[in-house]
Amino acid sequence: MLRRREVLAFGLAVPVLRSRRALGQSRYPERPIRLVIPYPPGGVYDATGRPWAERARALLGPIVIENMGGAGSSLGTAAVVRAQPDGYTILLAGTSGLVINPLAATSAAYDPVHDLAPIAILGLNPTAINVHPGLPIRSIAELIAYAKANPGKLSYGSSGVGTVNHLVGELLKARAGIEIAHVPYRGAGPAMTDLISGHIPMLLQSVTAQVVELHHADKLRMLAVTGTKRLAAAPEVPTVVEAGRPELVAQQFIGLFAPRGTPAAIIAQIADVTRMVMADDELKRNFAASGFEPELASSPDEARDLLRAEIARWTPIIRAIGLRLD
Image (cartoon, rainbow, N blue to C red):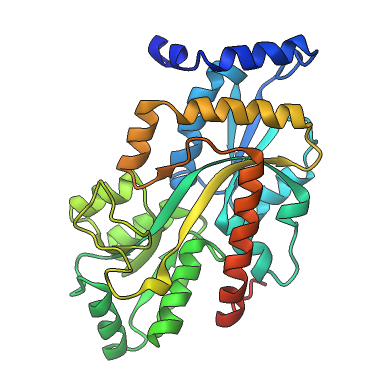
């Protein structure tokens, strides 16, 4: 539940919602909204979507979160694409599900530009390149040297085939000339468990507060992050640019989308609420502490432009490394 000060912080949104009621749009929402997170619980999408939903309930009413993992987020995304475009099904999606999967799929289950209506971008999130602390590796250069000296002995986990984390791993292998086997998981939670227990030696994982905490507790070792600046929560960890690997820069976007055909007034209403949510000081601090860079004033048009720009950026990279998702 929101505290009173948080509800008051959203006061600027009230005139917007009242004006829509005056235009005869008072019947939305009249039942719970379903927010589909196309990954299992425990990853960056949960860490982003759940705080958004907690605050958005003050203005939109009940929001039911449904984690629908599988096929690198394609399963949940396709379910939203097929849903009724009535504003009661919303997708929390990002670069992996809306850019990489469709570009690399042998037969794409959906067209993100044609089949979805952008609402707003919540922010950007880099990947952390992690190893088990028992390995004698403390930098990207040492990782590459170790892989070359021990061919076939390293493997890396990711939250699924076709995720940004997977693509960063394949880029690293291709550009550094090393062979590291990919071990895909059905989400970040199981992959993290296996890294900590030593079942896998390496994990490419979106930065979350949990990743930072485990790094500081010496449960894992972050070698670098794929953003363009160091994390405020872990300033000792270099960026891939500082590590001499600028080709690995990758920050996935995470945003809200609805099925194509959802009324524009409903899209605008959810976007207005999202801007109010993202302006919350506590939310901004929490996101920054976990390495997530919040987008404070995104609009449906800006979200659409970013989606198209990311498709244009990743297309030649995916073709160059020959990534195919069967």
